[in-house]
Image (cartoon, rainbow over all chains, first blue to last red; front, side, top):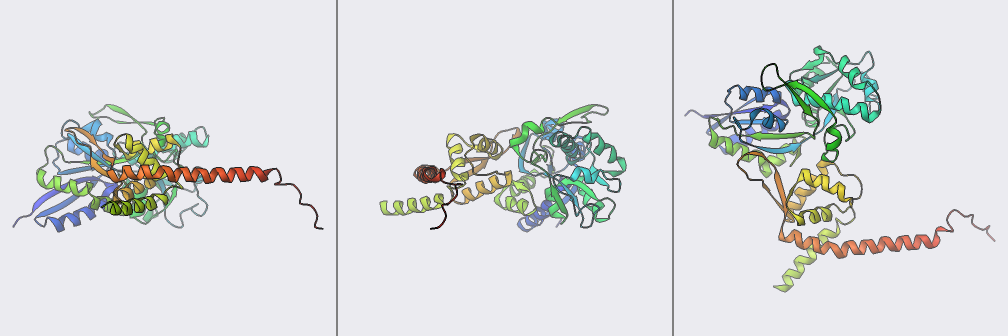
Length: 272
Length: 136
């Protein structure tokens, strides 16, 4: 008997929880074959916007639904978790014995130290990293800090999605990466936490985060959109053109259930 | 029947007594008695109300909400609506409302003990720092 193929298009940062959901779902619905496909969230949204058919889309920024996907091909989405930006590294990375939340900018700007981020046009972690740098400039009172960090992290150090950055660190191709805490935990990386006023984690500081802005490619070719800093959130939806809406809704229910909450928390996310 | 209710009330009072020091549970119950709210709103409101002992990160708030749900003080559901964003909303249960009322004498008692501490301190504070007389 042919199994029903259920395609989950998701942010790279959600790789581990989606694998866990897929296993759980297969045990509940053995007639369904869950297929996972990951990319940067902006890339996922653009793919769907271009007519690609997926049963579930799970993104690392709810604003992408409003900006690109509503009212078609998505009508309703569920905001289910939050996280924070951290600086990840491997044991033995240059400066890692000394780095802390107060001196990380000085360590990263040392000549011999390299760091990577994801692409702001493809991945929310990319524009959130740029926002963190802008907020850090004000928080630490270091004029020009954003420009210094941005100039040092040249195109060769910018990757399509945040999940790629872990492999870069593991391959010792760079010393540090800007990632979500959940990816650091999922891949067993060491990390430096940043102050709440800059790490985009706490709704208490939403007003401060709003001072950071990043320009990215817009909905149509050649257009630009200005994104404003907000606390990090993850969201998921069943697209209107999902090939298997019944099974897709079951999968979404699992994600939002108490079992789903437990899985997400075990994968390092802060769950709503 | 009434005896059974008394036992339940005592159990609930004992449960809440363990959460008076940091004031997270009483404050969340107080915020939710007004209206259902999602975690994002509650985190902001908690800080504005300024009744919590120490700093609270979002992970701690959500963990507390889940514990409160396990103890049947709050329940949660997903916002319904045909379009747009949906979030998990938390609302007070009947047991949560009773817990809030039971908190009041507990908070009052805590306030009394803190005031007694301050009163006793002020009685001796003028002597603190002064040199002790030499031993006879």
